[in-house]
Length: 508
Ligand SMILES: Nc1ncnc2c1ncn2[C@@H]1O[C@H](COP(=O)(O)OP(=O)(O)O)[C@@H](O)[C@H]1O
Ligand SMILES: [Mg+2]
Image (cartoon, rainbow, N blue to C red; front, top):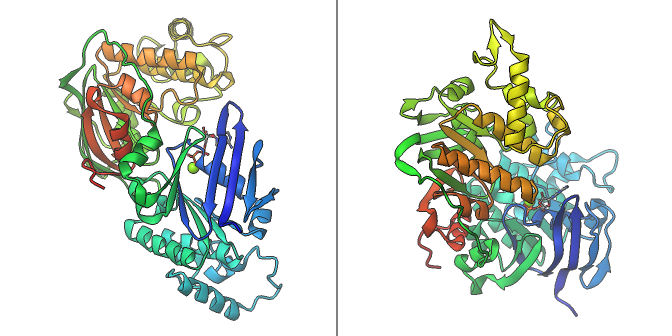
C-alpha cells in the first residue's frame, strides 16, 4: 500500500546544447499540494511536460500510484489521470464555458445537450469554489475566469493529479487567493496538485511540501511547515557558488548621473501595468545590475528607456536632459544604446549583412553618408575593424547576420551599439545562450565600456553575472524595484529572497 501518487526517478531530458532535466527525482503524495520551485530555466516546465506526455524522457522512469507508466501523448497522460492546466490558455473564444469544457472529450455525443452540460459544469465549479458562469462566452471572461475554465476542463476529464505551471503569473493577488482555495478544495477530496512557481511567499502559503530544482537537478524536498523563505531562497539560487569580481580600470562615479528614471510607469502588451513607479539612477562608468526572474517587468523597463515603449508616467533623463516619451530615435540621439534580449528580431536585421547591421544606427551621420549616398567603402572598412575588435567569427562582412552563431550575433550587436559612442547602455541578458569564449568577450567589452565612462544597466537573470560585473544591484519583482544594494554587500541568498518576492526583513 503506497501513498505515492507520482514518482519520477532519474529523469533526464536533453535539448540541443542544454540538459534541461539532469537526473531529477521527484515524488508527490496523494492528496497534497506539492510545489515545484526554481528559478527561470531550472527545468520545471520540462519536467511537467514529461509528466504530461508532451515530451519523452531520455532516461529515467515515471510511476503512477506505484506502477510504472510511459505516456506517448498528453491524451494518454490525461486518460491515466494526469492533467495539465496550461500557462497559455487553449480556449475557443466564441464558445461558452460549458462548450469549452466538453470540447475534446471523446464521450461527448454529436448532439450536445447544453442544458445538462451547463448544469454539470456549474456543479463542478461550485464544488471547487470557482466563480464562473457556464453559459458565459470565453471572450467575456477575465483572465482569472479563463484559467478556471482550463481547470474545469481537466477536472471534467477526471484528472486526479493536476499540474499548474506558474498559474499566478497572470492573476491579480485576489484571484490568486481564490485559486489557492480551489486547490485546497481539490486536495481535500483526495486529488493531488503540483504547483509550479518561483514565488517564495506563494509556495509557503499554498503547499504541503516543496521540491526545489536548480540547473535541471533536484536540490531537495522539504516540508513546508519545517522550512522558511530564507532556506528556500538559498536552495533556489545556490549558496556556495564562488564568483570573482571583475577588476575595473577606472572606478564608477555614481554621483555623476548619466541615466535617471523617476517614478516611471508603463503597461505591458496586454495593457496591464508592468512598471510601478520605477526610480533608479546610473552614474558615469557605473554598472547597475537589475536582478530578477524574467517576466517581472525587465523587458518593459529596457524598452521604455530605449524609447520603444511609451511610459504612462514619470520622467527619464540622460545626462540631465529629458528623453521624449516613446521615441526610439530621440533616445538614440540622446545617447542611449540598447542590446535587447531578442537579438535577431528587435536588435538586428537578420537577413542583412554584418556590415549593414553594423552601420544601421550611423547611416545618417556624415562619416557614412554624403548627400544621401552611403559611402560603401567606409562602411566596409569600419565593419572590418569592428569584426576584429569584437572577435566576430564570420567569413566576411558581407555575410548575412542570420548565418552567424548566437555568440557572434551578440558581438555584432554590441559592436554596433558601442560604435555610436553612447552615454548609457541597456544590456538585457547579454550573454544568455553564449558559449564560454563569447561570454568572456561580451563581458570584457561591457567592462571596457564602463571603464570609458558609459553608464550600464545590466538586466540579467544570471546572478553570477550580475554579482561579478555590477557595482550596484537592484532587484525587480512584479514591476517594482524592491532593493538597491552595493554589489560588494549583496549575497546570493539575500538576492534570491528578494527575487522571490520576500520583503527585506524576513522573520518567518
Ligand atoms: N523545447 C526546448 N528546446 C530547447 N531547449 C529547451 C526547450 N525547452 C526548454 N529548454 C531549455 O531547458 C532549460 C529548462 O527550461 P524550462 O524547463 O522551461 O525551465 P523553467 O520552466 O524552470 O523555467 C532551459 O535552459 C531552456 O532554455
Ligand atoms: Mg517554465
